[in-house]
Every structure is written in structure tokens, then in C-alpha cells.
Image (cartoon, rainbow, N blue to C red; front, side, top):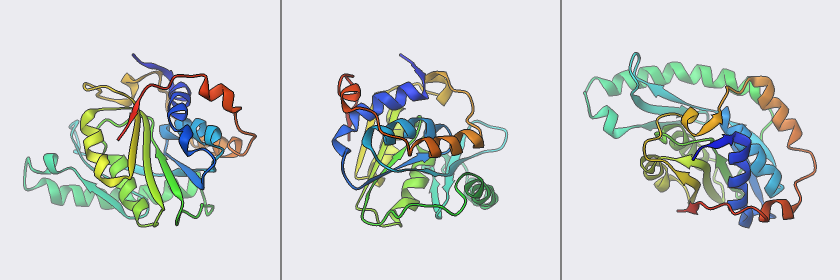
Length: 227
């Protein structure tokens, strides 16, 4: 069953994350689609919201993910993909270096100089879907360097393989629904349109508005599970 849109996925995920409400939490949305989900989570938990940028690195001309790069020097190499050929690892590193400049540019556009202190806090990294888990893995590696008190990953939908990739990198992983054959984010949502820069910045502004009433959240059965 698909979610109507990322906001619905975010509300379902927020219901699953209510035990974190009221703590010293910060919610980070993975740009870009993850921000729509993270906005709903941050509002429900009454937690500050910020954006985090990571990108997959795919083999040019093929639907093969070699790994991912994140701001904050996060780098994840997919061991299964790189095992296919000894030439793929140096190719991946070259592509990753090129991607870093794009990531820094995107960080400046979306967040500028404003950032939240993460040391000692519970950091909830939120994405709209985990297909390979590569982007989330790179982001988790980078965020661990910020010395959070706890590092939590949450998503409405994921493949079992992606959950295996990210589980060793987080203190806990929360997921509403797993889909084994998930091939792209668009397969999880009826509406998975691209999220422009202006929408990300608007969500950051709106996240400062008053939170949702608790009774709205606890009335929804979230399903899902945690690891």
C-alpha cells in the first residue's frame, strides 16, 4: 500500500516517534524529499528542524548505486557494488569528489550559515524512503562525528536491504512499512513530485509555528516497527 504523499508518510512516522517528544531532540530532514517527512515529525515532537544534504553516487549510464556522499565528510561505499569490478572503487572516489562541490553549494542555498548544535542531543535523521540506504548511511557517518547523544534514523518506508545497511550506524532505526521490491521513492507515494529549494526554506520557516495537538497524533495507529 502506498502513502498518499510524503506529508501522510510523515504523520504516520511521527505517531511512531512520539516517545521522543519532550526530549532534547533535533530533527534533520535529508534533502530534499525527506524534508517534507521531517517537517511533520518535527512539528509533532515539538523539536527544531534543520536540513541535511547527502547524495547517491550512481554508475554513469546504469542504475547501479556505488555509494553516497554527505556534507560533513560522510562517505559510504556499497561493498556489493564495488565488488563487481576493481575499476569501480577509483571511479566511485572520483565521482564522489565531484559530488562534494555540488553538496556544499546545495547546503549554502538551503541552509546558509545557520545550523543547530548537535553535540549531546538526540538527533533524528529523517528520509522519505530508503531504497539502497546509501544516502542515509553516508549522512549517519557524518553525523556521528558531531558527537550526538543518540543518533536515530526514521523513515516511512524502506527495503529490508536498506535497513540492514543503516542499522549498524544508528542507535535505533524506525520504519512504518517495508517493501522488498521498492525500486524508487516514487513507488512509495502517489505524489512524489520534486521538492524545490524554496519549498525546503519554507518548511524551515513553518517549523517554528505552534506544534500539533497531541491528541491528533495519538489517535492514529502508526503500525511500523523499530530496530
